[in-house]
Length: 426
Ligand SMILES: [Zn+2]
Image: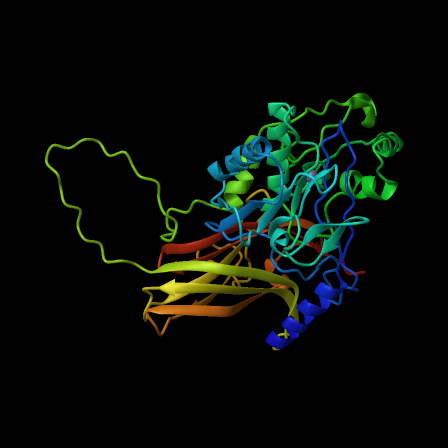
């Protein structure tokens, strides 16, 4: 089973077609994210499922950021607004001067502003060639570009575009493409508007008109027109001339969703806590010595949406994780995954096969480390689609993965959104 998954992975990686095209624009704040087109017929019943390594970073992770060019002023502005995300996401951007970096930023690669999506930033990039920029499947080039930033750029524009591109780099998609959105486009006007800045109909289709659906990991909760991930459009592009605000700050929902994806979990002992301002005391009290509890840190989590269990002959999701356990000798842990609708309702279990103590759908697997410091690689857990107990049709869902010791959650990877399209039987 394991070797099958690995061969699937390399096969799909070879087949993935990436076709970035770039905005040539001055008045619309556009960008590209990755456009990954699965070039392989789905073998599973779940027609939209696509095997992909997880694109979300691990909560608490250090993400190194390096500028490939640009002057000190524009670099300082990008850094300033990128760091805004750190207030709401448990992510640590570390700006490095040299050496490897997960996010590599150029100001000169082309005239557009764009970013690769989530962890793809660490494994894909654009390099400059004589014939313009070119895609490479490694980290030698830029993963993000700010083509219209210069010393005269207004503050608001630095803020809007930096927040937006770093939103992509953290794993957020375009909000105007949220499938829960109900914008009545004036389609021909949309094509004409973007054609003026050199976009083909295909590009306008993929960056503006198309709604989510082909990607299994997406952030598509409740539609939020105030999101920083939403483009601005002039009213004539929408039937009835509905107003779309020009957003340049994080909305309440942007903050909420990124905190869900990268939670500041009180229980995650590996995350350093901020100092607490203690009230002054006259008699210093020695804190009792706490025995150090177990700590767990994830290094990778991925999900195969075309998982299959040979024993039960069921289709499902296969989760594969790498993590370390410290101080966990001979203690029993539960690796548990909980499933919810995108707006946060736990999926209800009725047949008591895959369920939690509260009656919601979940899957778990117990393990007991045989060493004080144990490393788990390729820890697998399978969730059959049938046991999600949802009707046929398209569903916006999310899951969260946690490792528990008794009633205490020791570590969590936060929420990951996904879409499931379960075909209705004829
Ligand atoms: Zn964008």
